[in-house]
Amino acid sequence: MNTSTLVQKVWNFCHTLRDDGVSYGDYLEQLTYLLFLKFAHEYAQEPYNRDTRIPKRYDWSSLISKVGTPLETQYLATLHKLGQQPGMLGAIFFNAQNKIQDPAKLSRLVQLIDAENWIGLDADTKGDLYEGLLQKNAEDTKSGAGQYFTPRAIIQAMVACVRPQPMKKIADPACGTGGFFLIANEWLSGTGQWLKDNATWLQRDILKLNAKQARFLREQTFYGNEIVPNTRRMCLMNLFLHNIGELDGEPSVDRSDALIAEPKVKVDYVLANPPFGKKSSMTITNGDGEEDKEALTYERQDFWETTSNKQLNFLQHIVSMLNVNGKAAVVLPDNVLFEGGAGEQIRRKLLESCDVHTILRLPTGIFYAQGVKANVVFFDAKPKDGKIHTKGVWFYDLRTNKHFTLKTRTLKLDDLQDFITCYNPGDRHERTATERFKFFSYKELMARDRASLDIFWLKDDSLDNFDDLPAPDVLQQEIIDHMEAALLAFRDVAVELRAK
Image (cartoon, rainbow, N blue to C red; front, side):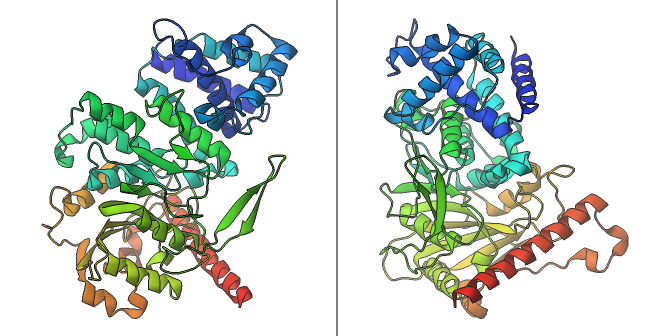
């Protein structure tokens, strides 16, 4: 069966299950469990003969030998048993539940997966199939999964600017389904069609990794945290299908709140889009596997300021994760750039302690979470020597007079070509100002009220030229985004007033 036929087959069955009320997220969960078991089964055969550590009575063979109610009973027992195992097994099957209530449809899905030799498929085929389902899940607004999904063009631009090198460690403290890891993996391995299509203007020479570098990339490069069990399992499966991690190894993504304690591992790069929303919370899981959240303020000796603001805490944590001269590219909302109080103190400390050199002002209409106005902040860690390390910040305005939507005018990598060119990844110390790319010295930034980094200089053309407005659907979405952003700001003020 060719790739397109297989993808269509899996998609069609997904639609069948949706008629029974099974969401994309639930379908992804079940697909993850069954695919993992089928992979383990194939690796246990000739010529691999690997010990997959799956107990004999709870392997793939125990499922395909049954149909109907006996299959459902065996499936439930398998999920429960494997969830108690250590390593990758326990991570994938943690708190696993059967969401397919019709035994006949469960049997059909098992047969569909059993009919293929999955190891024989290339990583692009397996990965594209799973990534497609993740994308659909993100687009399903009812699921709320969009908060875990960063536009691929943004991630590609971030990676193309940071340019991670082989034999270096990369982290994402809120990794969602693993999008940053996958794009960084494509950059390092030279795979990914986006690299081949844009090799000239990316000035990208495809690396040829030796055996040691390839093994390090697969087993030791990526370190992540994801607090939501279902999202974590999808992340691990997503990575595994792209040849990151080992079937019988330890998971590279911890199911824990990254902010609770100082980082266990120092890394060379952080690529991240921490969750939106200002209030930190801690997820409590009781003995029955039920989850609840409670407000949380982190008390950490390595933090500059104590605050319940989640994004400010993630920013402080990311600084603490980096090796000296480590590099970070982080998506942060506008409030991090201008907020007073702890926000101002953290900004000042960041500019002093690190070399904050570039801020990309992102357009509206590109995130599934409405009302989000965000930026990519690029900075390098520096020695703790008491010196001021930020000499000045280059700002690129991709927001003013730019109009995007999630459906009719999606953001593409081509839309970021000018930014990457201005960034000049080959030598970022040699840059040229343009209409959209401006430099502000450290002295100029410190002279601004609250050391605000919320800077714009371009004129909004729509204010004067009513004959050249965006298309109605684009304009409508922009109005919604602005109103949502205003509501979020009012809610934040209300929370702060209640706290006083």
